[in-house]
Image (cartoon, rainbow, N blue to C red; front, side):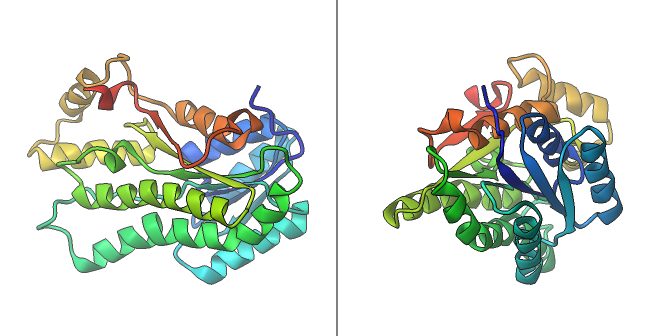
Length: 267
């Protein structure tokens, strides 16, 4: 189940957190993995760890808002491994500010990573993914990281939710476009809830600040109370969902949204 033997994957924002855990699981499942990030030393360390575990890995510097970085990253992946079968648009940032408090510069940076990064990653990878898709019974696969904030309103970070809602719709629209053009590229989105990563903890701290308190434990309890499953998520919970969407086991899925949130949006 969920095997990726012989597959080649590229994951953005994969120096740590969900991206790094996804890379680890993909290598375990038989894939060759390239990871891109702006934190070079951490990214190289992650790649070395994957190789030390017996996998084939590559790290490339990637600012997802720069078209030339994407061209270099995908080109380096194809040169090293011979193709591309899977793209995970994982890189993302939060803002943690309300509409009245956010500056235009902060909005542009948020859009640069969360929206422009997904557009450029998808656009740049299309030729390689098309070629890879022709060799697979289930086609190649793009997995975009959205959020539960892209499904329901976020009173604490509405601008982040705006970008993640854009990712959700782009996922559906690009799946339809590729189908219309006859490209064998499936496109699906993952919508994580609050995950105990560095970014998740930033979100919790922003929530505490916006509530007028620095009491992280009280804020954590409020989050827990809204999770019917009884715990917060960890990186592996999301990485396993990404692995499924990357594998041929999800071959009948495109334009779909996989919500992994411990029941948060079931309310």
